[in-house]
Length: 74
Image (tube, rainbow, N blue to C red; front, side):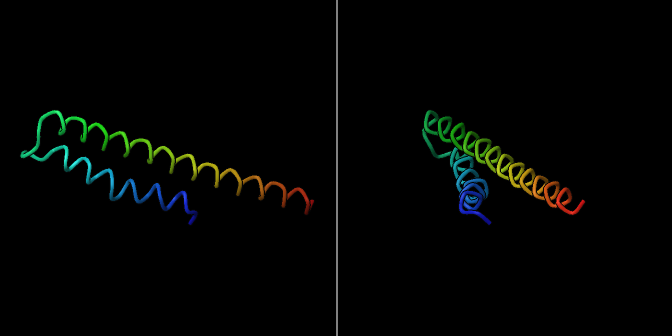
């Protein structure tokens, strides 16, 4: 896996849930809770989108290689 993918997965699996959990805790200031929750959701959505883009790019590269290889055989 690429380094970019590892970083994005780390943010999706560790950072975003931690921020969302902190945003939902009951012992915090209301303003801090809202900001942390919004930031956690934003981190989750952004890095999920980045993984989607990376996977589609890889899929497209594999398809392009397959087409080029099949055209060279014929």
